[in-house]
Length: 162
Image (cartoon, rainbow, N blue to C red; front, side, top):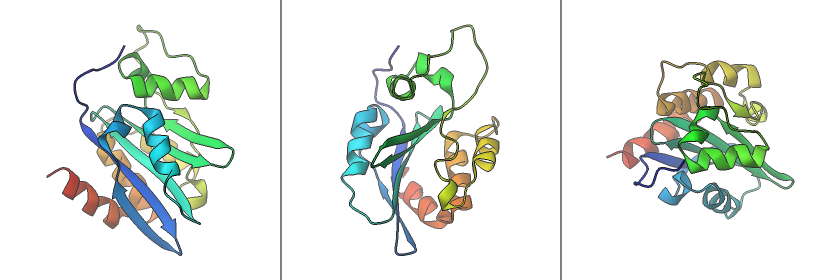
């Protein structure tokens, strides 16, 4: 069920404080371990919004937003749980059964409204997730653009991918 070689992709921690966006790179362990990603985000002290954007192996993405009452999560493709531990962990935390191996559909699981207060309503996020012709990094770029931190996101991803 798990992929044991190093995972490709990237993790971005996003903070909005005092009306300004800040993006920083997350540790590579966040791509394979949901607990590591949550812990890293919880350590970021901010009076504003804090959330993470994970592009895992260029196969799917995870949005996660810790809050006082728990963590809001969105997995772009539930079928990823069949091959990746972090996706299985997301479904486990959401208390959603993974799809059958015969299921070839692609659908998100989790909270499509987790960025609604930041300018991305659940309907628009659903449209972005449904863009199956886009890679996860392109979908995350669209999310960043729509929320208003596209330039900061692009600059960080360009540095990380070099």
